[in-house]
Amino acid sequence: MTTRSSPPAPAGTTAFFVQAAISFVVSSVAVVLGVLYLPVDEWVRAFLALGVLYVITSTFTLAKCVRDRQETQSLVGRVDQARLDKLLSEHDSYSTQNL
Image 1 (tube, rainbow, N blue to C red):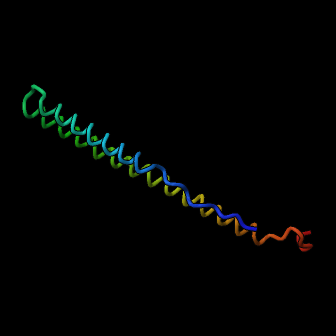
Image 2 (cartoon, rainbow, N blue to C red; image 1 turned 60 degrees about the horizontal axis):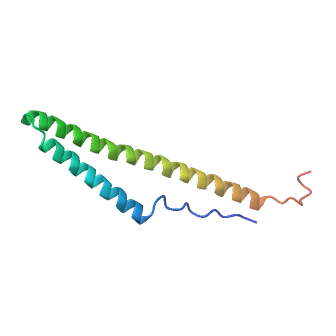
C-alpha cells in the first residue's frame, strides 16, 4: 500500500501572472516618467535613473532566490515522501521476524 503524492500545484494562475506583469510595467513606466519630468539637473536625473535600475535588478534577483529556495524545499519534501512510501511498502506488519 503506497501513497503517491501528487506534484505541487502551480503557485499562481495565468491571470495572476498577467496582473503582476502589467503592474510591474505600469509602476516602472510611472517612475521613469517621474524621473524624466523632475525639474532638476541632468546629473540628478541620471543618478535617480541609475537608482531605479538598481532597484529593479535587485528585485529580480531577490525573486529568483525566493523561487530557487521554494523549488529546493519542494524537491526535498518529495524525496522524503518517496523514501517514506518505499519504507512503508517494504514493511510487513504481520511478519514474525520483527519480534
